[in-house]
Length: 226
Ligand SMILES: Nc1ncnc2c1ncn2[C@@H]1O[C@H](COP(=O)(O)OP(=O)(O)OP(=O)(O)O)[C@@H](O)[C@H]1O
Image 1 (cartoon, rainbow, N blue to C red):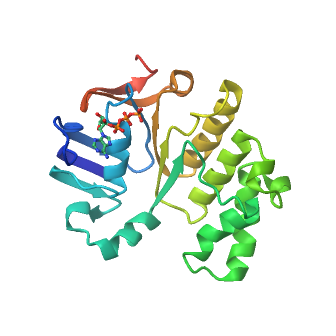
Image 2 (cartoon, rainbow, N blue to C red):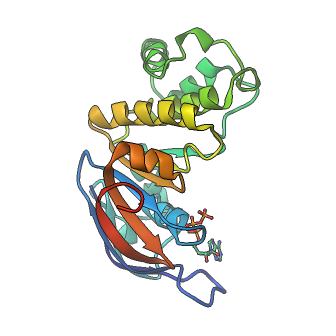
């Protein structure tokens, strides 16, 4: 589902490579944590997979797309297959929970009756059925993150990428969010989570890729320190 072959990334003006000779293969349906200290290269790796940036060297393929040969016009086709969740939720403040999630279907030009059917189902799945008419500032951080997750999966992506999804949440709320992501993974979505959060990595006991100074120095199943 995702393959990186000998990928290196040097930012413009950067002295050292942010990622160095990365080889990574993620199969369909996998659940993967990417961990490492601040500056290790986690966000850069996710940005490469989303084609927000391009590698200096190496090949990347995502959901069947060869990213080196993808034109700017084709990037939206890749993004249809890849949902994203950020630490800071990035919700539209002047739209309700329902509207935030529906908007992601509207931009994909789904028909209104399909939107009216699917949005309540996904809100129910993330535990927000009763909050559909609320605005983001009327919700807790955990609830806002659930809206962001609902929005990220509303178009059934093959891959879900999360950058520090529990970064702003307390431990109890974080575990709730992880259970939801686990559920989404069990339904078949390939899941990549970049995180510092040792508690959730230890709790889940899944594949953990450890980055240090832009290199993969560990790749095995278990807790944060394995
Ligand atoms: N736009 C940029 N231009 C130049 N250098 C960058 C840029 N973005 C990141 N870097 C550098 O690349 C390296 C990796 O950064 P990256 O953000 O991928 O790390 P990270 O592991 O996600 O860190 P954090 O956990 O703090 O988010 C760092 O040395 C960083 O300073």
